[in-house]
Amino acid sequence: MPEPFAVKDCAIIAIATGKKAWTCRELLDTLRAIDGDSIYYHFWGGLMQPRFEEREYNNDFAGWAAHSLNDAPLAERMAMVDPTAYADIEALRQELVELVEERMDEAEGLQWARALAPFGFIRSQIVVFDTGRRLDSAGDLAAAVPNFSAGSIFYHFIDARRRSPAHVDDFRYWLAEFGDSCLTGIERLAAIDPYFQTLTELRLQIAEALQEEACT
Amino acid sequence: MTPGLLERYAQVVGEDVIDQLRQLSRPLAGLKLVHVNSTRVGGGVAEILDKLVPLTAELGIDVSWEVITGGAEFYQCTKSMHNALQGATANIPDRLLEAYEATNVENAERLRGLLEEADVVFIHDPQPAPLLSLCPNRKGKWIWRCHIDASRPFRPVWKYLSRFVAGFDASIFSLAAFAQPLPHPQYLIPPSIDPLSEKNVDLTDDEIQAVRRRFQIDPDRPMVAQISRFDRFKDPVGVIRAYRMAKHYVPGLQLVLAGGGATDDPEGDAVLAEVNAAAQDDPDCHVLLLPPDAHRTINALQRAADLVIQKSTKEGFGLTVTEALWKGKPVIGGDAGGIRLQVLNDHTGYLVSTPEGAALRIRYLLRQPRRIESMGWKAREFVRDNFLLTRQLREYLTLAVALRHGAGERIELG
Image (cartoon, rainbow over all chains, first blue to last red; front, top):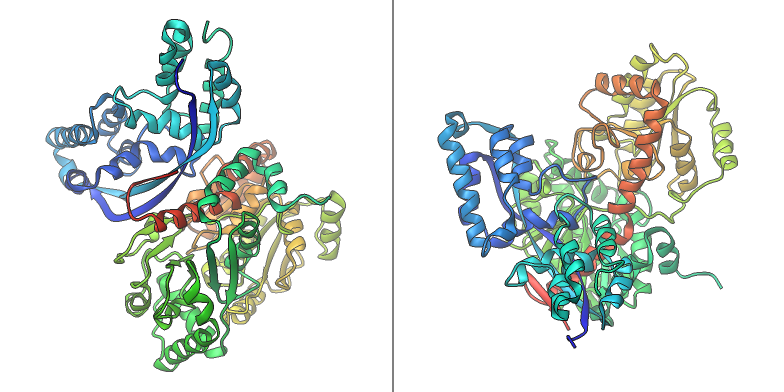
């Protein structure tokens, strides 16, 4: 029998790094040097910060390239970067750097094009706390998820991808310990795209994925 | 039994949000936390603290709210500092700076014991900033909370102020764009509104109607309102110009410009005189100077309006925008500061840069009642998710925990 699922919660707070980029060159230079935490924040932190409706792009770099730099090719390429596909934040940083360099080689005008607004690099601190709740079975998890806080959803479904070696969420990781009996639930969870929804919407989708025959 | 504050908030924001606050406050139990600002009534800071403090206390944290007081020269100085942080050229005479420092020395005498013993001290805005250096035996963490749009400060004044601010353990700005180079972490926390305050609670139609009658506002004709202090950065004269332009196309249009004074704002009277002069004797242009406790009246005026305007040219955050959005009103807002974070073109309202732009959006929206309704619904949900007091309290608690556990990116509590 697997260990009980420990329900944790978290809160994130944003910190200005003071670093700004007005041009592609400045973005490139800062991307090379900025703390990995900041890169992480610009991919995932937005889920825990005020924003409106669904995100058009899955990371802030792509959004800035589209709306402030007005360079659609760079925005589109950056938007397709999936942070979970990289072994670590350094590999992700390298991918971003290469995308910017490649685009600057393609479009000479980007060497001096100035954005309408600067890209402000932000990093974050995350405070994780144990709620004390323990869940023994997949059924318990399915019943509990609708009442999870947005912070718990972020911690177990988003932040987990950075923590676990296989880059999977905590729910799938735990359900896998039940052997093949929860394959349906695991597949359903894997099919959820975490990028373009609010945490409240994600909670609903996760709850649905864990209902009805998720485990046999 | 009357439900506690936390239970009442749970009814608005959900039980999960309140549970999270309880969990987050546990490691802070027994902590002594103090907020210091310069006015108990009037202005957004006092309004936030008025509810944030009791809510924090209900979570089991020992919290108090102290107010520094000073004479006319002190407020004249701090008003100039406020304007200078927002970018206005303000050469503050030495006489006023001396009054500023002397006032802080006087207040430090009164508050030193409390502040030096506190575990976490939040100093709000420039007024009490020198208190830090006047409490040399402080044992806690001190945080400077800047509520002002300091994105392009008048440099000589910022240089003077940064002497007092640099020594803090951290500062908080409402937006990344407002942050200034400082030798400590600069946290980003937008402010919030209190859904249970007199200014934001639901009102009956009768109460709204009574306020209309009191100010001779015709319920059968459209009305737009700007609620804010009489301050040049709020551009009240520009709002009157926009109203006049729009009235050519919407002849029945009425305008309400309503605001209270704040004890720390000595320029209000002069600006009010300019506004009255601009309004002339137009019976459809209602300029209302309201007492600082007229919260329900302001609430009713916002609800009575078809649209709300906040045509600021500089704005720290713009809590009046948040209040209007919470009441389901699209907002025509100046393209400045925190208004940009709240007013999203075609979703919650429109950003404008000129009186002409405001007039255009007034004309457009008043011809589109369905649009007003759908934008209003989105606006309320947007505030529920992002800008209620509980979110701000969560971030303050997170910050307090973070400061007590070092600068690491990840803090795991037991």
